[in-house]
Length: 172
Image (cartoon, rainbow, N blue to C red; front, side):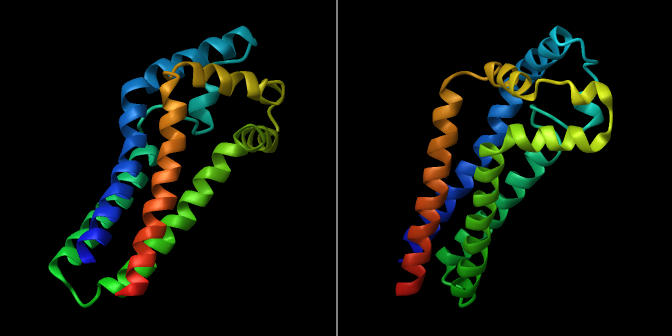
């Protein structure tokens, strides 16, 4: 059973690592598309950097998923080693992973509104006129179409594998 739990944890770790891998490969193209859209709207392209918006693998887009994957891999190793701590660790870590993935999913679904609200809080009239939906659509066009499928598969893997690992933990 511990090997199954470890395999599920490693599946979730791989799903989390997919985020920075895709952003590292295609983020520059997405950023260029976003800059082109801002120029089309007559808005300075520096607003992305000024407001911490990135489409590449920099910042929290790398360290957060890489950290989660590392913790999951370490917990998987403990499961394989038969550590007495794994039951408690599985519940805590996988529970947190499920909560974090819910936040990621919510963030994906509410991106336009969140960015609009963030721009509005700045009080900058130039930011207030940004067509955020067009900006995000342009950035999305910088990624291959299969990334959308990967994003959805990633959520299925995280929710499914984490749920199966927790169910298995309950049986141990």
